[in-house]
Length: 169
Image (cartoon, rainbow, N blue to C red; front, side, top):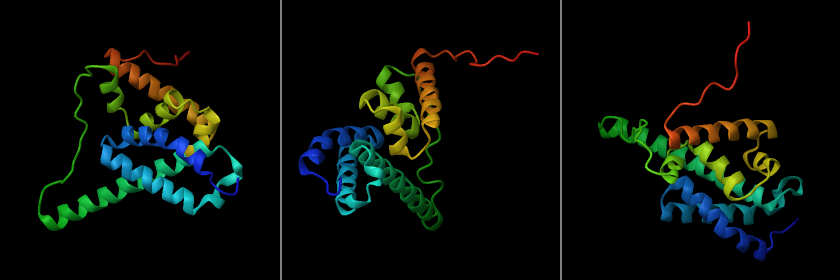
């Protein structure tokens, strides 16, 4: 695939926006993230590695754009706290509130867990496509997905899970 096909790209916009909305939790930020993703994909279409899945490649770009924006935001908040004289601007320690529904519990998962669950469970990506999108080995995807599902189960059911492995002496 040398050039991105407009039809293929249009087909992916809704999926990209849904993924971005779950990551950012704000419609305007999600739209900005999708726009930045499409711009990057169009400008670097020839760089799509090993002609893999377009979906995995676009999700990878979107996820990395999101992580980069979070890093910039943290750096900006740190500068504000240093020069603004305020105490710990933007310090979001985990405010754990009892989950009211499955969606509330899902929203409380880490960004990485939400991203992986969205890719595999909602978008229907294969483990291989998710591994390509996140640039990690497929075994890492499988173990992280297992932990994400366990965390979601714990949040929705409220009881900690029994340990997965037992020790034998």
